Image 1 (cartoon, one colour):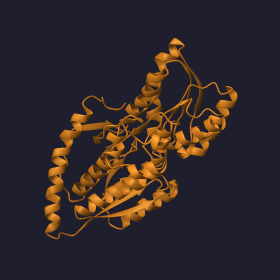
Image 2 (spheres, helix red, strand yellow):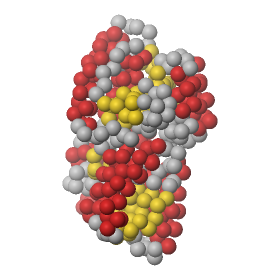
Image 3 (cartoon, one colour):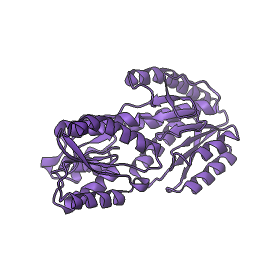
Image 4 (cartoon, one colour):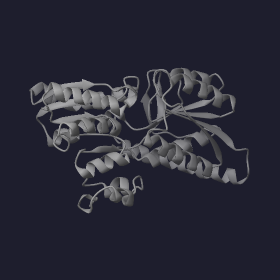
Amino acid sequence: MLPARKLLCCCAVLLWIPVYLGAAQAGKAAAGNPAAVRIGFLVDSLKVERWQTDVDTFQKRAKALGAEVLVEDAEGDDDLQYRQARKLVSEGVKVLVIVPHDTNEAVRLVAAAKASNVLVISYDRLIRNADIDFFVGADSERIGELQAQSLVALAPKGNYVLIAGSPTDSNARLLRQGQLRVLKPFIDRGDIKLVGDAWTTDWRPQEAYVHTFEILEATQGNVTAVVASNDGTAGGAIQALQEHQLAGKVLVSGQDADLAAVIRILDGSQTCTIYKPLRIEAERAAEIAVRFARGERVEVADSIANGNRNVPAFFITPVVVTSKNMRETVIADGFQNLETIQKSLPPEKWPQ
């Protein structure tokens, strides 16, 4: 079970104060020219837009604090990610930040790090049943709830489709739990019928496309909403909807606020996305990693159960993004660029 989600925002503020002060102290120490600490960052695949954003932000913050970050891209390969973990450990990193490809396979990455007394931060995707030292990310069940709530608010009756993420990603399963928690009362009353439920290996958009296409064929296009777990799967589903002349008529959720998804929302083919303030997530992870690497204490205000124990955690607060609040969310935060968006759309569809 995830921890209670009450007061997550307040918890984030509580955690921010000591971490920020510690980071400032670390910055002062760096000015005294201590030996730069090394931090390893293992990422699932930099082909995914959001992970490149995370890595860039993490590196910038860590460098400002006097740390060196060694990044490895697993390209969606579990064995490669394991070899990369061992490589970084052999190169003397003090902390390993992991975005696992497979959260189950990642247990051996953690074991390799801990065997050499390297601390581990599980980033965005929770590594379960492993001796991790910290988790930085969002409450995935809450994101799943927000996705389903956003669509149900617009269509409380009809045929729904679930397009889930990778079955090997614990976050994908938590998302689905949150989605079903919202949908179940509607399903039990007979207001909503689940006409499709599919997983997508490695979150591949092409699999989302195939699953959605097949469901549309089986239902003769009688679909009201697609609860897609991220923007990649949403894009695949929308391609299938376009081929059935249903894009813009069927509600579609997403997650990550990718540029393509933001444009689809403004264009009308995607209903919403869930934005996680990635700059905050990456910067806090960098600050915590630097403090860990220097042997400093990190104050915490929250925790998450990963199967082994309750792990100290820092949660970011997810936000539903639609065409109506795009300017004050992803654009105001600098996560997406207004000029880039405008170049992709006619003026009448620009964010208001």
